Length: 303
Length: 237
Image 1 (cartoon, each protein chain N blue to C red):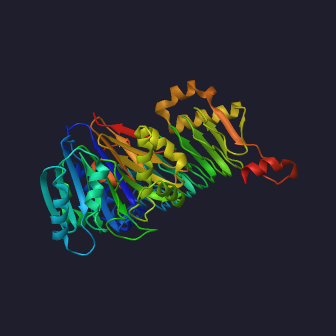
Image 2 (cartoon, rainbow over the protein chains, first blue to last red):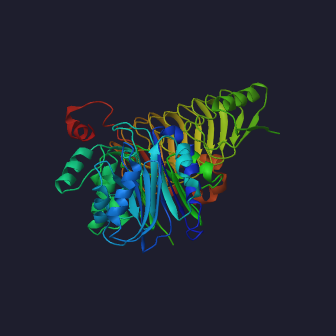
Image 3 (tube, each protein chain N blue to C red):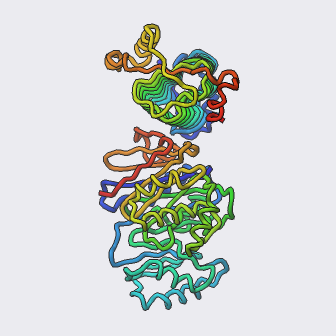
């Protein structure tokens, strides 16, 4: 199971109610994934500002960790904003340098500290529980922006915690995030190959490899569309997944159309979801909804 | 005058019970408002009434049906009209995977597109698709007909028995043992009659394209095992 959704706004110039829309759609798919819920939301990018969401660890001591991280990053750039919600740290930093370096510096604070998202536009919020819990903890629906993706998880192959929840940020690549419904059956082979090249995997969730794969393909110079096309042959198993960057939203569906994914596009919006019930709940009567075909790839750009 | 039902705030069981009660009370026309793309609506309708959903429906709509007419103004999810015995299901939008799978009779009309595995293992009836259909349509079809006005995806009509398919657009790739046959006058008359009955708004356009339709049927090489056909079997299995 699992439910995935995506939304891109073409009309509101960065002020669309992305959080509210994504949450409404996700709520309609809550029954497909009771284990965890998460969203990746994109605001108009600021070139100067890096936004980070950091998991502060597993066992309390969040205040100490927060102070430690603040001390570590202050030499890299001015801290523009810092706040904590439970185990989650949100940090805005005047920094435009190497994302992997910043990420590694923060994660050197402790073994269970993880940078959940990093970018100029992207913020990922995810946790164990339902979309409604996510709203209660993080007030997701207040966030406005340009586009977003979301996920409700029914765990089938790895443990249920914040790190194993989706969306996955492609660690080290600013603003690249992925949500996946399905099962990547050549996960272990791919992971072994990437680990031989020194890439760190943060979880045992097979979906994590999609972000790693796309990051690798983009680093080779592929466009997002080319990377999604290539993934149809490089990833085995069943998948419908969405990938988002600072200014793009795209999806790919496996060669055997084993997992559902529907979408529709109007002059103002693009909406994608595992079930139409999610589209209907946020955009009643929008019309033109079609299920993606096997091997179908679509990519939309922000204007 | 149709009786109206509103799905808002009702469980699927309550909605389906209300539809059946209305029909049992003698209503021949039931209009269902706000279906909200929910699953399992209008399943196992066994009386000759017309049920209209004024939006999109989810999975398995019109499944296990015998004799009713179901109209869907929006799109549908997976397993539309699955295992229907008889009746008519009309979708004004597009249908998800496995539309009209294993139907034994009746007619399924999809005005726009169908996704993967449409009309697999059909044992009778007609599946008529106004737009395109996806991968592996018609797989192991035993009887009945599939008519696609647009293009069809890969592995079309794979390993069929006696289902007959007609395609107005491009065929991406024929499945195992699927062959293209000549379109006879009887075939053309059947197509024309089907269009006149089920897609009357497009009749002129489709009549003009009638000669473009390709007939696809089983090559019958997989019906019985024969050692001399070993290469064919190797490819299939």
